[in-house]
Length: 238
Image (cartoon, rainbow, N blue to C red; front, side):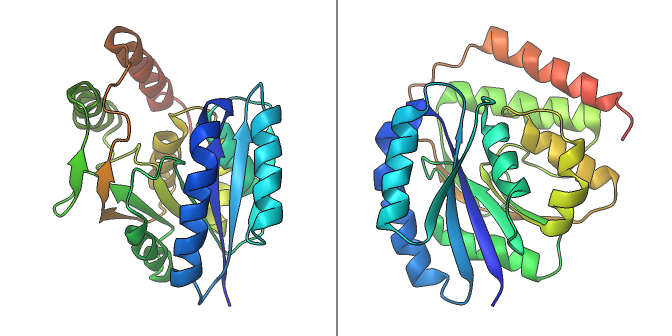
């Protein structure tokens, strides 16, 4: 029986959604992953972590399939990378705590790895995907994926930021040590490096719904950050 670890990156601001969404995930995986030895790893990151760590401890006692890990380094990437690098599972995956991507797509994510791909990732830009999001986030995503990633990096993949990914042990061992970013950009960086070293990526369509349509994104701040990280990656030797 193959093993799967499902990393769920969280910080202190996620405390309100942690318990109900872990409950949903446990119920779903118990019904749909009986062919695997699976585990949910709550990947806590950043400061002010006492309350969310205590809640994670409670959930790990309540559900034998749930564990937790902590890194003081803030950022989604820090949480996921810490969980993946400490995992011994055959397949490592991650999804966002808000479950924006429908759980029913998870079996397709794992199937992509079973088919022999090195990475299998959700994409909101494939035919068959259904996406509901705020206009502001739609604009940011369009600029990021269709202009910056394609123009500056020349990537083949269509979605670098969908929080729904599965990778092999080889990716963890060979690609993750090359990933520098520990925040939101780590996903695009990981996929770019994987492409550069000849690893195979499968994208699958997803049903994706933004949970907070009142986005507080500051376009004047975010887009320059996007550009700076992409340019830095473009001129880095892999």
